[in-house]
Amino acid sequence: MDAAKSVTPGAVSHILANPSPSDAAGAPELVVQVVDLKPLGGTSRFSFIASDGKGKIKAMLPAKFAAEVRSGNLQNLGLIRILDYTCNSVPNNEKALIITKCEVASQALDAEIKSEAKKEEEPTIVLKPKDEGVESKPPNAPPVVLKPKQEVKSASQIVNEQRGNAAPAARLAMTRRVHPLISLNPYQGNWVIKVRVTNKGNLRTYKNARGEGCVFNVELTDEDGTQIQATMFNEAAKKFYSMFELGKVYYVSKGSLRIANKQFKTVQNDYEMTLNENAVVEEAEGETFIPQVQFNFVKIDQLGSYVNGRELIDVVGVVQSVSPTLSVRRKFDNETIPKRDIVVADDSGKTVSVSLWNDLATTTGQELLDMVDSSPIIAIKSLRVSDFQGVSLSTVGKSTLLVNPDLPEAQNLKLWYDSEGKGTSMAPIGADMGAARAGGLRSMYSDRVFLSHITSDPNMGQEKPVFFSLNAIISHIKPDQNMWYRACKTCNKKVTEAVEGGYWCEGCNKNDAQCSLRYIMVIKVSDPTGEAWVSVFNEHAEKIIGCSADELDRIRREEGEDSYILKLKEATWVPHLFRVSVAQHEYMNERRQRITVRTEAPVDYAAESKYLLEEIAKLTAC
Image 1 (cartoon, rainbow, N blue to C red):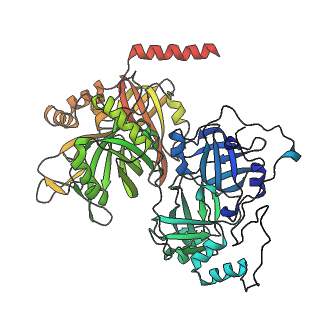
Image 2 (cartoon, rainbow, N blue to C red):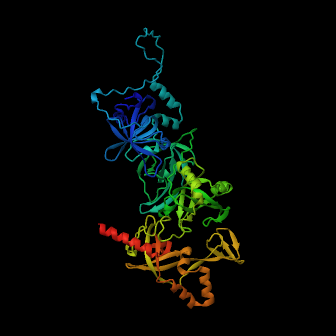
Image 3 (cartoon, rainbow, N blue to C red):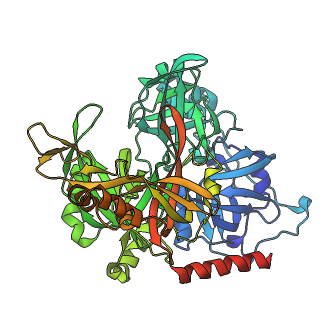
């Protein structure tokens, strides 16, 4: 085989014997074949099996190398030259090779390399000679005349002098190898990371059965864009709170890792870090880097499962519209902050409203307003998903927004929009769907359950909302409930009567002479297995009642209570298809289950019959 298209014999054995090389420059040349190359779910990284023709090991490519894979420069069965790496121990006594630096050695070969040579015939890996100031002697060279011995400092003396003169952070970098965050796991021993503080929480106090204490956390990001959340309690929190400064770079060591609690994690990492008072944190003075932003995009039509959850999500979309800046008064401190709403769409055929706050509203938002006619592509990291207007998104303090980013997902979306998306009619994600339509939050026929499936489990929806479809009849609507609220005609938020007359809107920070009424009601629904109370908001309530809240109020005032009650009764004993969310909320210091209608549609009997026939076919096939 051509030497340029060959692996290094014994490369895997060398890696296992030297799991963390201290000197990359003096490491041997390690060329391995990439076998079974595949993307890691939900990340921009790729995993593969590194093979030297005889030995194999599970491996992961660096994040920056993903572009080489997507461009086709590196394919399955290709060869790479490993320049720097870390070999970690993982559960079940296995090893995982984390490649931190490499280069393509050859395009894809025709087949996997398999060595049939006997072990004793394998060439020995020869280390690259280090430059010690002495040249190697050619075979026929004349005798070398040695000069009188001069006083020469040993390598260890030089290194010790350098360490003594270096700053603490530099000493830390010189004495121990810096590890990428992706290479860390709970089973690892000593490690040092170089990270930037990209988000810093407040120092909070808590009280539990074990006493009182304080806690704070930071989000740390390395040069590859990998993030991890580090938490400090009590003495460690007091020690490091003033030390960690937003935006600065630090060397961190002597921390511990554990599996991340999904309920509280704020970054995309399977692990979270804990730093106690013995941890070492030193500022990397004079060093700076801008971490590569790593995205984990969620399609707009899949946002439903994230509603009101703790997990923050990322989206990429085409800007459809941009609103002017509004001033919103914050409740807890009465401070006025700027807000701007934009509407974005993606190739799922759905749109969603995104609320930009503070600087993103005034600076980036204005930039988007100026270029909205050109339909720019934006990528936003760290968005909160709420149930306002069905489903909507909102930025938080650490949100990042990129305009026309150089990302494969953005480029693909641009191509789709220019070719077909521009002429496609796209509906808001919270809008009504026909019974037989797929898309949106989900089809009315996916996750179909009976009411008893929900009501029999009072703890359902504790961690985050869960979604189901129902075929149920409205059996009762309470006529004496507060069925609506006074809303601002501009933003639909609740208004209050002003002392000087009119209605005051906190959202728009203005007083209007008029307001509108919007439904917020509960109805009882029933099916063959039971009944339950469900919450319904304005858009869906209007379709159920058959008129707006303003019209129903007029009927009650002008035509009397009997006409009002008759209008409600006309809406009962009518079958509907519902898409509902199930979540937990607190009422009177008691946790209760809340079922909320997210989408409503009349029963399409042809589609319903087809669905039932398909379900019967599944049963008979078993």
